[in-house]
Image (tube, rainbow, N blue to C red; front, side):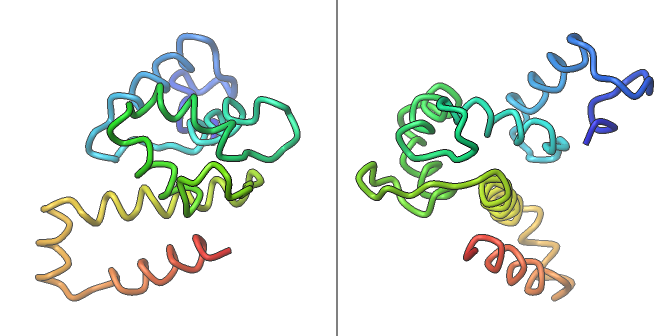
Length: 138
């Protein structure tokens, strides 16, 4: 995960490297930026109580600031499986990262270039979709 961000290969992440990673991930509309550290930081930002679990109420504020009002419900539903604040749904770090990864894969697959590639190759898209669905189901 550190290698994704460590520009000078010193085995450490300094503040400018962290800021550059954050900015790149925030501005990445294509979904091609490595997001390992970014996703862990998102979990820590959402886990306001420090309990090691994130609930919808904790996630709502940060998600709103990140994606805006229009995409809030869609983003919460993609990560938590629901946007209902009364659901009581919580996610641990592993579950949160798995759901984010599955959501990011789904976003990549919905891109026009990916659809064209899948149609032409008939390749591994089905097995990747099954893997993402299995992660999200956990």
